[in-house]
Image 1 (cartoon, rainbow, N blue to C red):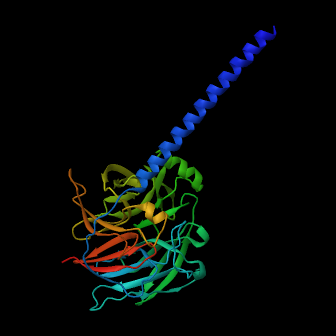
Image 2 (image 1 turned 90 degrees about the horizontal axis):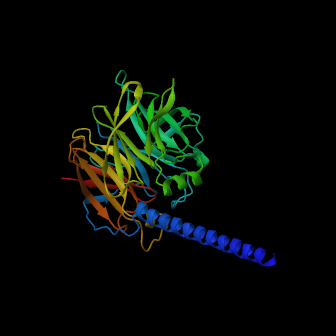
Image 3 (image 1 turned 90 degrees about the vertical axis):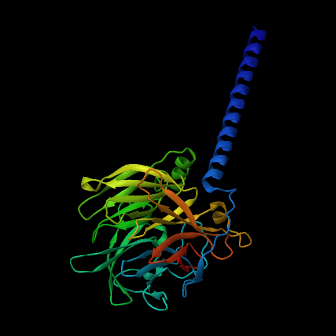
Length: 367
């Protein structure tokens, strides 16, 4: 009887060891898979060749211009001073908005004065969009704001030459991690969420497991709903010149997704275009329809910031995005010695403005 019990005990012990070994092996495989996936997402081994344009630094922009958008009349709006997640920030001051007249002989960014009931001490501007009301020519500026790490959208009206009047603050549970917006009315817009869930740990898990669960949200005063899903991490968003298509940068998948606007402001997925970089904001040339992207060529260098080996900058252009063979071209590239962590490239009549997360901004001549 004792011998049978001993043999049974030995068998149980061996079984437990097998289970433990299998669990250790599964954990090791998961850790290895996670490491390789993160390395791929971040393009951690990528080195970028240098390709410069005829550029100079914009005056007054010292702590980043995360997003830039330009009206057809050459008026550019810039959001500056973003403090976002664990990314570097070289200033303790609140964020600011600037305006720049590209038709001026010497274009210089001018700080916009903000009037109204908005806490400017915690103003932290991110993605921006501008809407012009064709009935009265009023200009509305939409700004993603992260005060105290929150997620909300501010709507302003641009008045005079250097003033924004705050009209409204928008919050909603579906707008839990807004990155960028594109306005389609005086109080309506599409917005990207860069996290699948408000909880960052859950989002990280979906990222590791390659589960595309981020979305694009449509907001209007009458309804708020998800307009499109199936995105790994939504970043920049913009609209085609004819207002028919919406473009979304899926930064983790290294793609730009193309959606068609349908009845009821639903978005129908059309296709994705690979860009080979972690692209941030999207700007659209109002004449040609070309897409311009500010990208991070190696986000490992951005996350592990080292001034001796700084994160580089990459500007891409997508030509003929609706054709069977879109052309993706590198228009500017730097290893971080001139410009660190580019996020946006806004073209206008042979000129190009390039913004960054926390560094400077460039004014370039494309001719």
